Amino acid sequence: MEMLGLYPVFYVPNIGTAWLMGLTGVMHVLFSHTSVGASILFAFLAYKAYHEDRPELYYYMKKYGIFLLVFSYVMGSITGPGIWYTATVASPRGISSLIHNFVWVWATEWVFFIYEVVGVFALVYFMDKIDRKTHLKLTYTFAIASVGTLALIVGIISFMMWPGNDAYYNTGSVSDAFFGINTFPHMFLRIGFMVMMSGIIGMVISSAMKKENPALGVEMTQKMGIISMIGGFITMLFFMWYILALPENAHALMGKLLPGIIMNRIILTVLFSVYFAIAIFRPKWINKSLASVMVLVILIFGLWPGEKLRESLRKPYIAGHYMYSNQIIGRDVPGKGIKNEVPLLAAKGYLKLDPWVPTRLRTITPENKLEVGRMLAIRACSNCHSLEKDGLYRPIVVSIRIANLKDAESIKGYMKNVIGTGSIPYMPKIALPDNEYDAIATYLDVQANK
Image (spheres, rainbow, N blue to C red):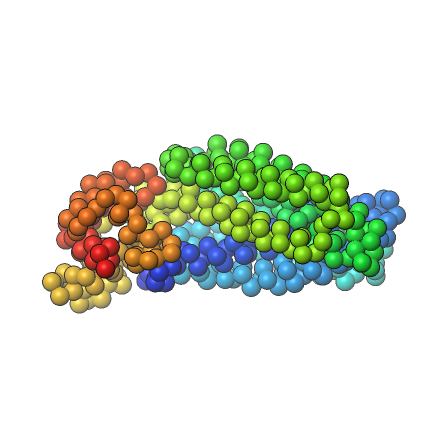
């Protein structure tokens, strides 16, 4: 019996699995980006401490390093595997495609990461126990390992947006997958943000030490303000390049999202420019409470919308511009021996091709039609939408109302003639047999009219 290589679908009611993955991912990005930014900052501070004979800078580095051990390396080590878990549950086929394309890249990244973890412990605990020149070399290697980890991961997640060239589909090679059009703008965008984050977190450290060492606290607050300003400028500069290096489906969605993106970025730019200016020119005004609040502001209004935007812009794909977000392969990849599954699904449907469909639901009857419809909606739609009327994550009922679909027949017609033909560039082409469209439409109509 012919089957697609699908996995069971795990659906969180009212939220959607992708939402959980997004929350875990954003927390991990905060911790990991602070780590990489801090490694660059430590290299800069260690250079100044060594060449200018300023031992007080080691004191600041040690304070920052101890905070980093907990904030980035403990919390990051918890949320990192959390991403693997939630991503594997939400998108098992997507994770599988990344592993098949980048298994040795990921292995190399783990080597860098292990050195990074060992390096940060050595950097902090051997600070007063080894000579300064050796410590400076250790700091440099720590920074290289951290940036190396970033570069390898960015190549992988940039592939999730798109390879950026057609050569990959014919060769299937790692280099054609890794070095895409948006890999380098993406990497420098993140480096800029990481540098900015290191300064924002650094102000928490410097403001907390003003009582015990006021002069150093004020000086480091000023320095962190300058570093944050530089990082913010790099971020905005490469964000513009990054936008230009996106695929056509992303630009189609950008047309809808751009006004909100621009307004969000203008507000954040003004707010943090004022904050950084205060740190530079009035450092005594920056206290621990204000610095901590600004970390939360950049997390909630900067990092979360930014990561959400990146995830949205690669729709309808989950990986490589060939696998749809609903785990169906949408184009041939000769270099990997991968075949387009859309025509087969259109001819036979999920009920015949999905190995995880219970036997009692493989044939639609009046008694099981709603249950089959829900099962098919979860399979086809839930990676991007919540299905309930009051769902939090892109509720599909809201989309039905926006499209002015008033009953099951109009929903079915829309699915068949719009989504089924791939007319919306940021939605998967979901081509199904008529009876499966009918079951999904019936279920969604019931959800919309509860």
